[in-house]
Length: 302
Image (cartoon, rainbow, N blue to C red; front, side, top):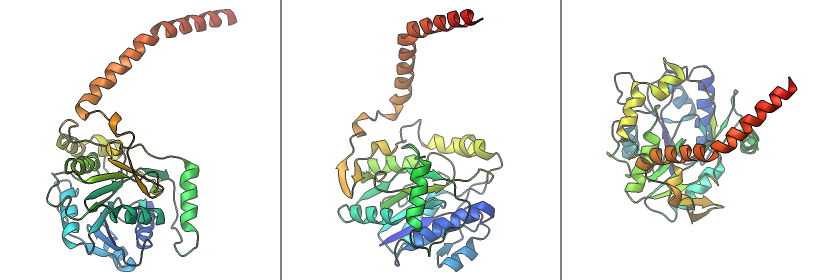
């Protein structure tokens, strides 16, 4: 079966609602699923006791109190009861399609990383997991909202035990870049990297950035974010789901058709700018004529 692990924000207000929703959705996947929560944030111990979740309060942190990725991943791999693990952010709802996808791939692959794009939705209230059809309602809301994030936004990672053990550098969780490093490392280790986006509707419950003193800007551009970016070595260790070796479609593994289109990270910026400026130069005569035409129409209307 499966061991899921995560680390939460304080269980306060709306964040408490969506984190409890996520944890309960994981517990609903299978009677024998194991869930481990790392960190001593406000309310964490009480929620773990209530939901029957294993609680590990001690996690290594930096000077800002932010948790290190390696501390969480290494402890999880040491204590997991199962050989297949999944780290998921504590606001992600996972459902039966996720369990089926993991079972389909893990039955034929021994060394792997499975991940997928998320769907953003607004959920304000606790979900009723005793009500039949709760999964269908959540999936319908996600598809109706129709906001699936691009390939670089990754919030869950299923992997074979040992893949990342004592391998992760000094990334901190909750800041950008570490998720893309996880994909790069799996690819460099020749693990089977599989994009589950077609078969799995992983639902991200939207929230604000009030947990950071500088808000959204601090999360993405602050000092900790810059250190995470530095560990990506100018993009050399940055990959997205577009680099996955396989995609899962209707329960079957297929070669990823878009993989050959992915350029090495160090070439992407220069290529993009050259292509953009070429586009601007090629369309300049057309844009100039359109501008003249609009000016003539404006004069005529006066």
